[in-house]
Length: 299
Image (cartoon, rainbow, N blue to C red; front, top):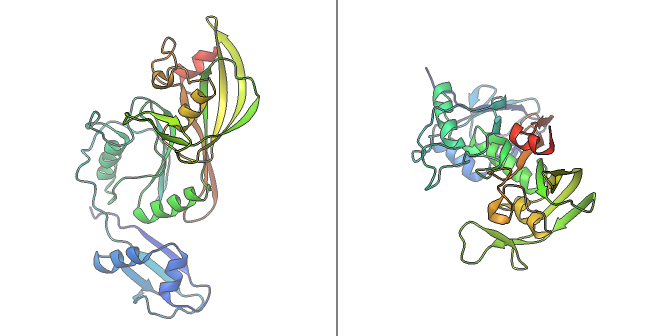
């Protein structure tokens, strides 16, 4: 079976050099070099052309991208993925807790990336792994993966412009007083720690908004169910911000939460929305809280 080579097509809307039209589609000089020297093709009306070709209105441009080589350092894992959406450009999956996004020193044999490598091999998709939004190992929920470096570039640029929207739900300790609020506090790596982060005036700008969904008490312990929206994507951002206002996540021992009721942080990505990288049609994905988090609030 021949490997699937990714391609896109578009019609020229004005007279311009092919190079200029490709640039407007987010294809960089580096991308053009890869197309030229690594087995890609540029076709205009089914004839191969160079980037200096002058397009006419209505010309059909086809771009065949080079085959991608899977990452050699990621060992495939045959364990299943919970895929909620897939097309030629992206995969959206619902990650379970306890699964790392990419291999690490402690988790080399199984990760989202390892499972994707196996999945791509099984489906004969010539792609390496392009994670759009990472989740901590013990955070569950929706993740977006690009199936080609070109798509990853487009989505990464949109993330920088805050055009990909992510929302989370969490159970935090204590009764959060304000029904709605925004936390704008810079985050930095904690001194003498490779893992832990902290709010610091020397850190990177970080912005989180939350809304209280329910205040409740479980076995005499006050807790609050909150919905959170990320405006930036710093490491451990939600965990650090909620702990900084005195409401660490239930189960988040690293940031002061108790593990009496849950052995991992009660955090789940419930919502992702974005414009499709090729069609620009809006697409929305939602994922309900997993049972171990929902049961904390009696559901």
